[in-house]
Length: 164
Image 1 (cartoon, rainbow, N blue to C red):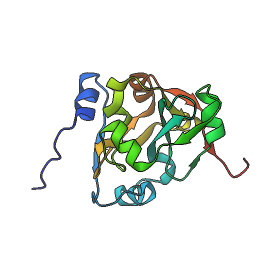
Image 2 (cartoon, rainbow, N blue to C red; image 1 turned 30 degrees about the vertical axis):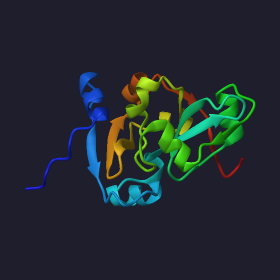
Image 3 (cartoon, rainbow, N blue to C red; image 1 turned 120 degrees about the vertical axis):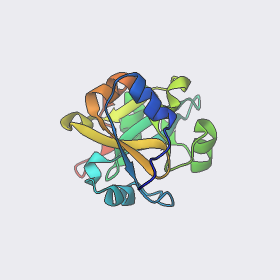
C-alpha cells in the first residue's frame, strides 16, 4: 500500500475552506516546473509556477503565478502591481523571504504574509490548475475560482506570449 503524503498547511487551509483538491506526487529532486508537469501527467499550460517578484523601489515582495510553459513579463507585472519596475527575487532571496524551497513555493503557504498575489489571465480559461503544495514533490490540482477567491488573487496578463 502506498503511503499517504503528509498533510501540509496548504491542504489544511483548503480543507478548512471546503476547496476540493487532488494531491499529485512526483520525485522531489525535480525543481523545473516543466519537468513537474511531465511527471504528474498534466499539460504545461495547467501547471502553474509560483514566482517571487520584488519592487525595485521598495523591495516589497509580490507573488506571480504563471503557467510553467510561459515566462514572466516584468513590465506587465510592474504595471499590474502599480510599480514602476519589478525584478525576480534570486532563488536564495525567495527562499529567505518565504521560508520555502524553490520548487516548493506555494501562495497557499504564504497567506499569512498578506502579499499581493497575481495569477496570469489564461488561468481564467481553465477549470483547474496545478500548483505547488508548499513542498517539493507535492502538487495540488485545484479548481481555479475557489483558489482565486481564497488567495484574493488579482487576475492580470503577466506572462510573455509569442506576440509580445
